[in-house]
Image 1: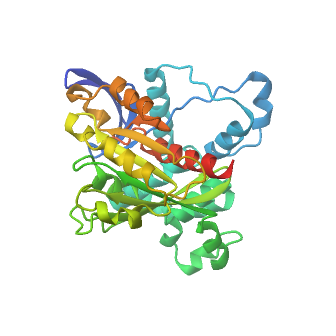
Image 2 (image 1 turned 90 degrees about the vertical axis):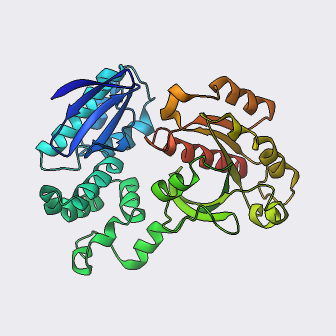
Length: 354
């Protein structure tokens, strides 16, 4: 069922799946909501497969396999409107529920977080199929889907007897699967109230983030697949520039990349950017073989109506200081968060291995 309602004077299109789940089109982005709270933002939907290439997809069994084949053989093009994409996502999620929560229908990185959340909410259909779907996707899925399940802790939901149903699973192989090929240390810099705690607690593998850390440092990790390599990001959150300036040589040592964050609704959050850039560049203990990749990131993209820092101003700072990249994200709605980590990982890989 599709309906409309007003949200801050902007129309929001809603597709209700059931009493727990609905999809919403907000600012041309499709979001999955669970119990009226934003859960995840949907990636671009369309894969424009040329007619002459259709035969290559005859044997694929899931969306994961389709995406893997498409990435290796075709060029991604987005040729449908946000409204059409919203209806496509809505149709896929509805089919997912109507077909007994069959994870073949959705990409692994949407299907399993959604299943796990439904299990946490004691949704009985999800409880019945959760473990079975983990085993099926692990046995029949792509290497990326196996890694997603392993690194995301999904195999930990299985007992030892159930793990025996995993084809080729042995503990040492499992450890090898989740062990990284490379480890990249990055630092995330910025003034207070830019969203570091949200980033650490909601998106990264940490449960002990302390916003008032007495040493001004918090640590987290994130695993990413790039060019068929398992890469682990070792993420250091730094704050309080003046107070901890004497300790920076230790904190920044070994860094291969940096993200400098600011708040697009707060012009004062820009004040420390130049000092962060200088600190990263003047200190010779940074270990990147080439110039250190620095990504400038504006947070709170969901609060466009309260914007105090224009996109043009962000790009101007990037160009003025010759930063490697610039983008805007929303930690509240997840918009561009995955892309941020993918981008800094790609930049580090290119700076050190090519």
